[in-house]
Amino acid sequence: MIVFLLRRLGAGLVLIFVVTAATFFLTYGANIPVARNILGPSATQDQVNLLNTQLGLDQPILQQYWTWLTGVLTGDLGTSYFTSEPIASALASRLPVTLSVVLVASIITLLLSTVLGIASAARGGWLDTLLQSVATFSYIFPAIVLGIVLVYVFAIALRLVPAIGFVPFAQSPVGWFLSVILPAVVLAIGGIASLAAQIRGSMIDELSRDYIRSLRSRGSSEASILFRHALRNAAGPALTTFSLLFITMFGSSLFIEKIFALPGYGTFAFTSTIQGDLPAMLGVTLFSVVLVVIVNLLVDVLQGWLNPKVRT
Image (tube, rainbow, N blue to C red; front, side, top):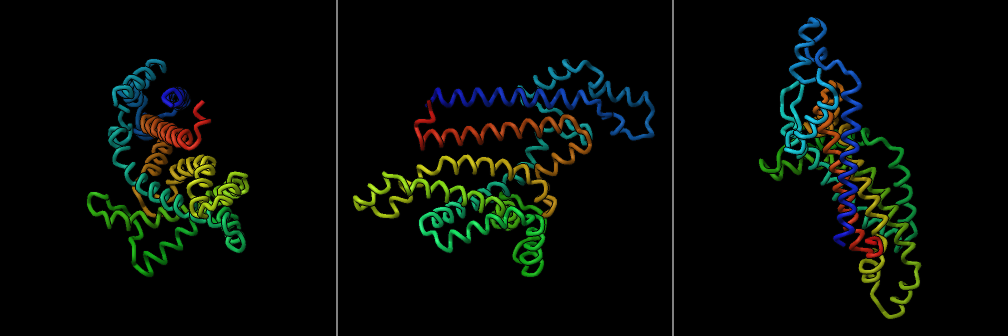
């Protein structure tokens, strides 16, 4: 298992290096007029040249990359060109917002999908038909429309939750939950049906196998068959789907943050890209790749625990 994990970790580190290096050379080599964007069109060329020198943008690109890379290895992700805020601090202040929404959405997705998928596979009938209908509907129904409807019903009409804003958990756990539950539901709604359909298909396949019939002939309870045996063996594909959903949720956070006015990671990434804030763009890229590597590593660990064959 240790060798298995080391191989996965090594592949993840290579991926982080390749993606961040490619992003650096593509962004810094694109000749984005950063100094001109900061100073405005009325600035003279001498002022632009001076700011380029101060930012180090007049140095050879390999030297700029080495400076950035050595800074990252010491924990310094650079400073925003537009706000002069350290990138590490900017990410640290915004990530809790997005992570709160994504984690709550993931819990909702995982719990409801597992219950629906198992029930659909075990019972079939109208429940199975309903699940497949909901799965199809969720693909074509825009989440932004659902978000607006939920805000109107629960925040404006019923006044059960705030319509916008974010409350830190340390400030008020109840306020934190109320501020993230609606965004989390909107973020989760599209993934519930697809993950439930994946679990349903895997469970149906497992329930048709010979060892399930053997367990039933020995008098094993249906609950034991479903949860102890079939679900564990069917969990592999579902874990892969769930990891992809988690990463997709993180990537979709921008739209949720715009709807609910949340000062999160997605908004920061979007603003940085529009402004051409190169250090911020690289910080966002670095964190995104690290997140993907961590999620995939956790899934690999769970896959190896559920199925020892994948460790080889």
